[in-house]
Image 1: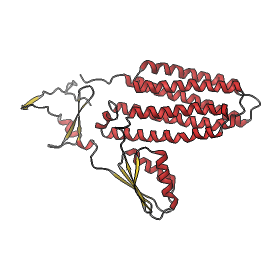
Image 2: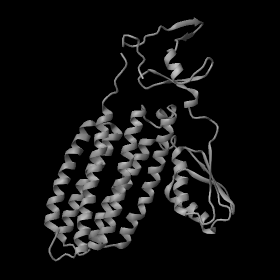
Image 3: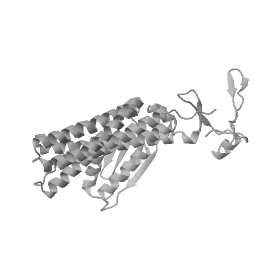
Image 4: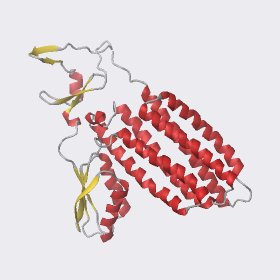
Length: 348
């Protein structure tokens, strides 16, 4: 927030020298009151990438004290409900999460352990007994920066998309299932990235540590990460529908492969544009996404045949829609890239 004087202009304050090499500048009284500071309360002064300074009350900086959450499972407790709540605490940024199992189903512990393994990155089980599980959530963003994690997530999703179309040619049910199973790996990165972004929004000192410049970047990447996760969902859906379309003719399979390749190109280019903040590449991706939308109608008209069963027609339409939606999600990512290339307004 830019502080202004009564005339509406910037509230300029002089830097004072207090002796030696120390300099001070007074804080606006209204700001101090609005954020609830009192005399002698500590604040953090963070140097930004544009050489400006960010003053943050210490309570807004993540404490070095480890945070812990506790979940209690009663007898007959729904397993999926418990796992969803565990993931919610993980996303919120808790350092340790304890699950009290009590006299619950003996299979619950195995279900939670497997769910953590499949869905989350950086969660270690440090204690386990018949009465409960204690997990530690490692931050991980120093070893796996946000942009690199997003690129890895996108590579997996793009590979799923390519392989889902290949199922039509190979007629391999095992390949279709393998594509569907890979969705768990994308979900792991999705949850990992959301956790980092949630922590960064709450603790602004983490923003630079995960490789971003401001809270605006956090919002943009939050939307982009969701789009990548949805692309993986659509790839899994295509693989699932392909099982019912093994009777498509060779020309029809080729057309689907061409549409998939173009959609994947849109997606790959969009992610690259975002990570590199390349506006030109983003614009090219958006233009190609429009080609995919036009291609859907053309391909649909060419491969749908009267001799197809109702189930085949429905599966074909759903498959083409998922391919088109992948390109549209890529276009969404490209628009985020363009938005982030525009510099934020600077205080005068």
